[in-house]
Amino acid sequence: MSLADLRGKTAIVGVGLAGCGEARGMTDMEILAQAATKAVADAGLTMKDMDGLCTANLMSAIWPLNVVEYLGLQPKFVEGTNVGGSAFVAHQLPSMMALATGVCDAVLVCYGSVQRTGTMGRKERTAARNVLDPNPYEAPYQPFNPPSSYALVAARHMHQYGTTRRQLAEIAVAFRRWAQLNPEAFSREPLDIETVLKARMITDPFTAYDCCLVTDGAAAYVMTRADRAKDLKKKPIYLLSNATAVWHRSVIGMRDLTVSPSKESGERAFAAAGLGPKDIDVVQVYDAFSINVILALEDLGFCKKGEGGPFVENGAIGPGGRLPVNTNGGGLSCVHPNMYGAFATIEAVRQLRGECGERQVKGAKTAVVNGNGGNAAASQSTSVLATAEAL
Amino acid sequence: MNTQEQVGAEARYQAALNEGRFLIQRCEGCGRHVFYPRVVCPHCGGDSLAWVEPKGTGVVYSTTTVRRKPEAGGDYDVSLIDLDEGVRMMSRVEGIAPTEVKIGMRVRAKVIDNKGAGLVVFTPEEAR
Image 1 (spheres, rainbow over the protein chains, first blue to last red):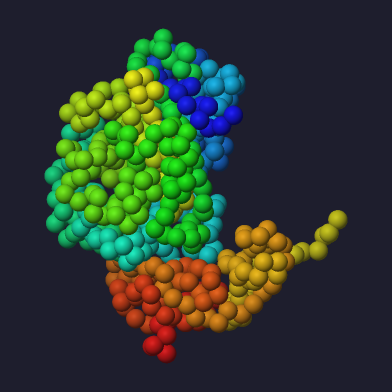
Image 2 (cartoon, rainbow over the protein chains, first blue to last red; image 1 turned 90 degrees about the horizontal axis):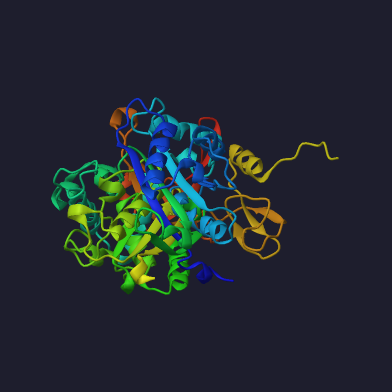
C-alpha cells in the first residue's frame, strides 16, 4: 500500500460557509454548526449520516468533544489534530484512510471562529495562548506574531533573491481583484500597488495589506467514498492525494527561511496524484501573509526557488492572469477567521464544480490546495483535487 | 522513586542568564551545538548535553522592525542571530536604530537585565 493507492477513492460531496466577515452575537460553535448544516444539506445527506468528524479550534485542546456533543453526533472516526491553519487540509489524509478502509462512511470536517466580533477578541485569545503554550526563547523579544515571524521570512527572501515589496504588493492586489468578483468576500474596495507601498508599516517589510484579514467565519465540508459519492446531490470532487509536512514550531526552528515544508508536502502530494504543477488549473494557497504565496508557488514547483517575485508580476495570479490563485480573494481579501485551511479547500471544490459565477475559471478540472499553519510556515498540507473527467 | 527536585535545561539556562552568563549546549554524542536548551539532542537523539560558553559573536540572519507608537515605547528590532557555533536564536540588536539593523551584520552578545531576568541581546561588532 502507498499514498497513491488512495488516489480518487474519496470525494468532497458537500460544502458550506457561515458567518463569514462579521457574525455579531454568535459563538464559534454556533456558526460552525450553521456551516456544518449547510455542508450536509449540500451533499444531500443528514447530520445523522456523519459517522466521522474532523475538527479543531485554537481555544480548546479537546474541541472534537464539544462538537460531538453540540451536533449530537456519535462518530466512529474522530480526528482533532491541530497543526494550525493547515489542519483542515491535513485532516484529509486520515479521513481518506478511514473512509477507504470502511471505518466510517461520511466525514464532516468543520471549523468556526468569531475572533473579530466575539467577546474574547484576537488580542485576548493571543494572550491566553501565550500563557497556555509559552515560548520562552521568543516572548522576551516581543515579536508581533504571527506577522513578525513571516516578516523575518520575507526579509530573508528579499535579501537572498532580490524579491521586492512591489512584488509582494502584486499579490495583495491580485487577490483584491479576485475578491471584487466574489460577492461573499469581505474586502472588495479597489486596491492598487501604490496604496500598498505607501501604507503604514506594521513589522517591516509588511504593511496591513501584506497581512491576512481578521474576520469571523465558519467552513465545513463532507467527504465520502467514491462509490457513494456518485449517487449524491452534487458533482463529486475527487481527492487525488493529500500530504502533510511539519518541520518546526516557530521561526527560530525554521532552518532555511526561504524554504517551507510545502517542498516536501507538495512533492508527496503530486507524486501520489500522478500530476505536476503544469497539470493544475486552479490554485488555492493559504495566504496568511503575502510572502506565503511566493513560498508556496516556489516550493510546490510552479516556479523555481527565488523566482516567485517575478512570477507574480503584472497581475499573473489575478483574474485573467496565467495562473489563477486564490480565486475567492484569499485570506488577504475574502475571509480569515484565524485558521483558513477549510476555506481554501471549499473554494477549490466550488471552482471544480463550476459554481463560482463571475470568478469562475473556465473548464477547471484540477486544483491544488496548500494549507499553512503555525507562526512561521511550520506545517504545510497539500492536496490535489479533480473532477471525474480528470481522474 | 526519585523525589529530589531536578533542574531542567530551561530553568538552568535562565538561572545562568540571571547571573549574567550566556550558556548554550553541545551534544557529547554528535558534537553539534544545540539551542535552545533541551534534555535530548535534536540532531542525534543523545541525552548528554554539556553546557558551554559561546564566543558570543554571530551574524544577523534576518531582521524586522516592529512598529509601535512612541508613547508605548517606539519601534524596536526583532532579529534572528546565527551564532558562530552554528545555532540560531531570536534576539534584539541594540545600539543602533532598528531600521539600521541589516542582514549579514556582525554582532556580539551581551546579557542585560530585563525586569529582573537575564536576557541576551546583541550590539553591532563595529560599535564596540
